[in-house]
Amino acid sequence: MTPYEISSSLLENNSSRVLAGSVEVRNSNDRTILRAVAERVLPKRAQVEDIELDGGIIPNKHWLQSALTRLEISKGDTCFCAMYPHSEFYDLEKEQASHNLSTELRERILKTWSTDHISHCKNCGQCFEVPRESGWHVSWRKWSELEVP
Ligand SMILES: [Zn+2]
Image 1 (cartoon, protein in one colour):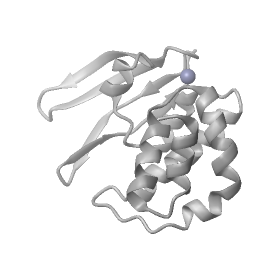
Image 2 (cartoon, rainbow, N blue to C red):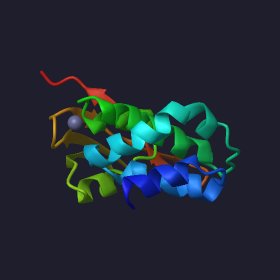
Image 3 (cartoon, rainbow, N blue to C red):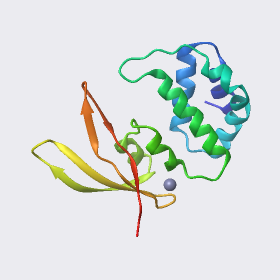
């Protein structure tokens, strides 16, 4: 999608279009694209947030809010990894596949099937501790920033 298409779908009063736009923003690391979207969308933020979005276990508002936060971040120089602690639904495997992160498996606890990872942002070097948690048939990750000595 072009920045124009993404911002148009976010500005539409149509929940599935707004969600599609949110996903595009979430998956993009291109500051040029995101800044162009931010320029059109953020001044109308209140209007965008006013839309009724439902959702299942994960409320759809979550995707919209995380897209809007990402647009805010894109305006400055803050690394996009600052987003991770804001959303439990960033997928570690996906982020690695897009070469945003490198991860070391710290510990696999076979008894509980839980895994514990330390991830490094390839862009700025920030480290995260990323345990997997689950419940209600979904699993998510709790991202917390780690101080590196
Ligand atoms: Zn980073």
